[in-house]
Length: 86
Image 1 (tube, rainbow, N blue to C red):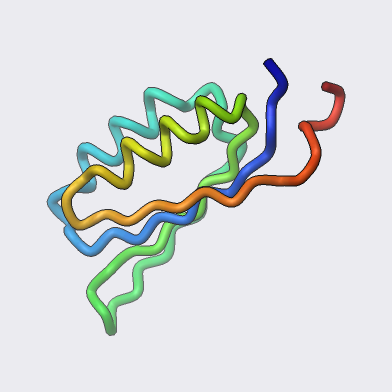
Image 2: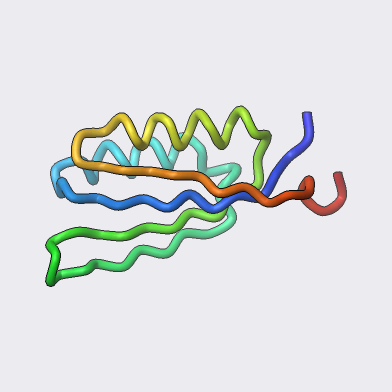
């Protein structure tokens, strides 16, 4: 199974979902290359970008789990080529 590089964009509108979100991200920590979070106070939400290097199925599973949280939206954008060295 080949790895892909992807960015998962996450918008958190429900601050109560943060604990569950962080728990899910911890589950997939071995695949996460980097994370950037920005609070957007004028709209009372947080925007998070996750860079991930994993098989397509893992990326889809993570994005799906995040998107199922109440008040959380998640969308993955994939690289066109397999990860370097694959």
